[in-house]
Length: 459
Image (spheres, one colour):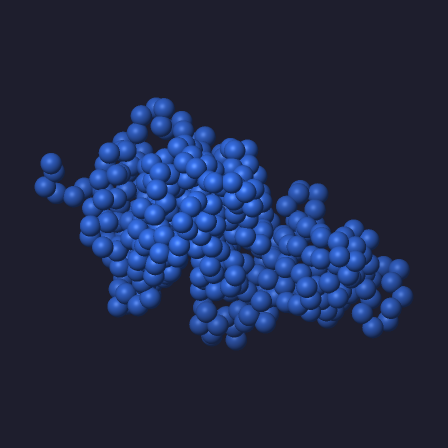
């Protein structure tokens, strides 16, 4: 037993076979990123993969008694999901990995379209914790879901195909930015100026007041059967129009939109799909709205997971509320959310002795929160020791980390919500760089080790 703690690089502690798997896993993960740029798209991807592995819907499963080994999924309003592989005694609790599938982005306002200065524009309202100055002058795609006035359901995906147009937010040229330069970084770009260029031509449009706006509306009607009123009942998101790409001469990292928290969500998905006939019921949670405080009926604060467990228990004899309470209270959880990796360009915001390093494995964060641990779940030592033993037995390379210096800031996850049931919960996620930027950076080795950790825990 070593007296001194020494963190280990994954790259220096794997064999040829595992090195190959890291890169194969990276390709599968990139596919998920490119196909899942919204929570709806992520839910569709997750449910499709689950069905292919033999999972059946909760509605189908509850028609008869649910027995050990059953694989069940819940599609919650097309924006969050639950996957469960049933174990021996649900009252004894579950092993749960809880991740979120929403990401910081720009949403269109309910009345977004207007014309000004010979340009047609969409007004936006940012979602989650973004740095507003990062969004102008990058190519954007539009993803979303619309129900038009005829009741037709229409999926929007414009800007991802190389033959699609993309969209754009203007910024000031340096020649005219002297006043802007005097502002703080956070105030340099105002939220109301994050308006997207969506058109410019008025060719053959006879309308004298808003010809370019009319041109855009005519295109939307022709291609998507959408009229302006439909925006009021739509969900449309602007995201970077980029594919997930390898980074570095060694191709060891991935740059992509949405690593937070799809890097944990995909690891969660692969892990739960590989669980067969467990002793303890295994659960993968894929929730929405974490980036805005876990509010709403698709978030972790909603009761759909609790109701899911109740439905499973109710297929057995002598169902009672106390059995549901026991099942929830006896459960153990990895709150699967990313953390910050130390950046060589910005080391001053981190406590280097307690910061995560890229390539050193999944990060255990005993607590998150801000400053004096405000708003955090502070995990119990007994549970942390149990997790350490699981990782040791399964050759999982892991590290500990905090989200910056104590008074620098902080962050939160869904951990505290599940802890309210009495569950044992600890934050356990992938370290990454440029978190909440339009395009983020993560290590393929850390992504793979995250999947390996979740699989070991669930099994």
